[in-house]
Image (cartoon, rainbow, N blue to C red; front, side, top):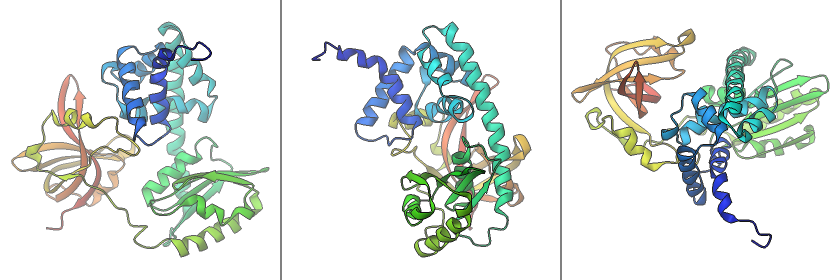
Length: 357
């Protein structure tokens, strides 16, 4: 105010505030909820040209954009530029003054993101092979010259999710190694690196994620010390994956209006996760793998006098144990699936197991 700045102009930046808050996984609590909610309202009503173009190429309806669209569709496309090329591409898109100027930039970001996705899948598989026999190890480490520096964090996240173990992934070159670490709930990965400070050139992070660098000759000693630290601070309970369920529901309690009702809790994300629903003892009428390399599992489940389709991403290997006629317990979120002009309710599964009875 002292400089004559009009505070009302700040409203024009709320869309960027929402974008950065959600994409950078800032907790959606307290005033952050208000800022993100107002930013989303602005994105829906007067989207800047760059975001309008990005939403178009990402298949996001402007009038329906929410925090999940930022987290899983818009944010990854913007971040892909900095991971594989240069962040200036994302900046230029957000600063574009016309849709005509923004559209080619959005298409370029979309192409870079597809390249990132393809490269990530290949490098995650390479890392899996590099891990070898896990043999009960409480902590995982993989390194090599071929891991892309912009992807090591994503690779570590995927391996941590898959094996539920703290994981470090490093790109090791002649001048040294740089890596990223991800952890499970209850194991502070940066405190673990504190115990290895003398081996590291630099490091920093928080409870669940960290970045670091070190001389190549220190990698074996780093792993040995981290394993010793993990043996002392990790127990079987911490390494057992746990799920939080907000409500156990019957299938006949769900309808096409349920997802919209749950979205009244928006913005959802870090610190305010989507509600997790569970249904038990469902009959799996049909089970099949879908997607590239059969990585996903699609089911038709029945119970309580009705049936619904369910999709379980990256759970295709469960097709070996979940057969038609099996009874299953699911944790999921209800969502609307639009296909060939038709809209239907489906369950997006986060956890699946055979029923005990």
